[in-house]
Length: 408
Image (cartoon, rainbow, N blue to C red; front, side, top):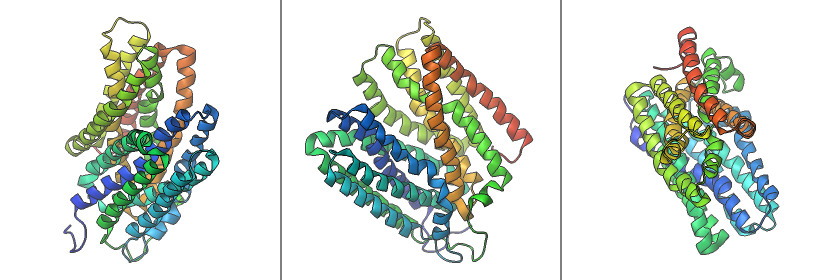
C-alpha cells in the first residue's frame, strides 16, 4: 500500500522507536542498575536497597490500564494521539527524574516516591510506543522494529546503569540524574516527531479491551507459546553472574563482562535477530536460539559438574547465553508479538504478552535460586539444557496442531 503524503516512512518510524526504547531503558537502567550501586556506595543497608523492587510493580501491572490508554491513543476516525501521549507521560517522567535528583537519596523514601511516579509514567508511555509500533510498522519490518526494542534496551541500560555511575562520581547525584533527564527528553521528542502524521484510525470498530484480546484464539495460543519460550530461555539468566563468581572470577571482571561485553554482544544479537527474522522468519529464528541455548547450557552443566574444560569456555558460554543469544531469541519473540497483536488495540495485545514475560521472569528468578542452591550448578544447568529441547518439541507440536499460532 502506498504511503500517504505527510505520513512518516518506515526508516523514520524505526529511528523513532530506537529513540523511545533507549529513553525508556535509560530510566530502567538508572533505577535497577545504577541506583543500587550508588545507594550501596553511600552505605545504605541491603534491605533498604531491596525496596527498589517495588518499582517493578507498574511494569507488571500496566496491562490493567492498557485498554484505557489505547482508547485515548486511537480516537475513531481521527489521527492517533501517539505523539501527544508520549510527550505527556514523558514530561511526567522527566519531571519525576528532576525531582529525584533534587531531593537526593537520604532519606530514601522521597526519592522512591519520585521514582514510582517515573515508573508509572514510563510504563504507560511504553504501552503507547508498543501500540504505535504494531500499527505503524509494515509486517516486513517487524524484525527490525523488535531489534530496536531489544537493542535499545541494551543501549539504554548501559547508559543508565553504566554511564550514570561515572557521572555520579564526577558531578554528583543531582547533576548526573538531571543529565539523564535531558537525554530522555531529547529522545522522546524525536520519537514524537516521527510519530506525527500516522494514518487515521477506522471510523468505527470495537473498543480496545482485555476481554477482546483474550477472546481471540491466536492470542491464547500465543500466550502459551510465550510461556514455553520464556521458561526455556530465562531460567538460567539470574544464575550466570553467581556462577562466574563461584568459578573464581573477580567481581570487577564480571562487572566488565556484564557491562561493556553484554552491551556489544546484546546490541549485536538484537541486530542479528532482526536480520534472521527478515531472512528466515520468526519460527526458525526462535528454534535456532533454543537449540543454541541448549548447547551453551550443556557446556555450563559440564563445568558445574566438575568436568575439565578450558577455563574460557564456560565464561564464553555464560556471556553468549546471557546477552547475544538472549537478544536474538527475544527479538524474534517480540516480532511474533507484533504479528499476533491487533493493530486496532496493539498496545493492549502487546502489553499482555510483555506482562506475562515479566511475571514469568520474576518467578523463574526465585525458582532458579532454590534449585541452584539445593542441587548445585551441574544439575541446575543440566535442567536449563533440557528445557530448550523440550520447548522446541512443544513449539513444533503446537504450531502443527493449533494453526495459525506462529509465523514461519
